[in-house]
Length: 217
Image (cartoon, rainbow, N blue to C red):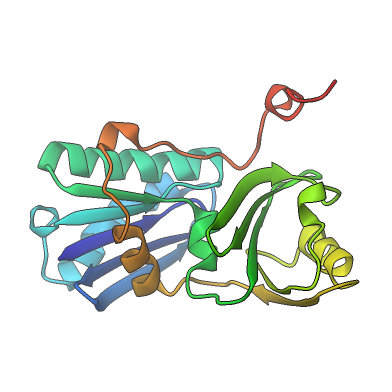
C-alpha cells in the first residue's frame, strides 16, 4: 500500500512516502510559520523521487496536532483534499499518540508544550489513555511505583518540572523526541480505522482564554 505521511504541526515540516513496510523517502524542511509555502512542492518532490504520482497513492496519514494554527491547518486541509477528490483512504493521528509509538514502559507520558503555563499531555498506561491540556499541578500526575518514560518535543520547563515531581516515588527517564520512526507511526496510524476526510480536524497548540477558563469557578 502506497502511503503519503504529512506532519506540518511542528517547526520542521515532515513528509514521507512508504510502500507497505518499506519507507521510501523522507523530507524535513525547517520552514516554521511558512509551511504553506513549501508543503505542496515537497509532496511533489518526494512523490517524484518515489516514481509515484498522487494518483498512485492508496492512503494518506496526517498528524493533526497539537501544532501551530497555520501549520497544522494547511497540512490537514491538503490531506483532506487529496483523499476526498481522489477517493484515497485517510488516517488521522494526533501528535501526542505519535510521540509514544515504539516507547515501551509501564507508563508513557508525551508532552507538547505551549507558550504559557500548561502543556498538551498524553498519559498512556496499558489500555488507559488520557489526553488533555494540563498544568504541572494536575492530580493526574499522582502516579506511584511505576516505571515511567516521558517523551517531549523540547527540553521545556513543563517536562523538567514533571520529571522532578514524579521522581520522588518513581523511576523516570526523559527522552527528547527529535524525529519520528516514520514507518512505525505510519503502520500504527493505519492499524486504526480510516476516517471520512470531512471529519479530519486540526488541533491547535494555543488555546484561547475562553477555552482555558471554561472549567474555572
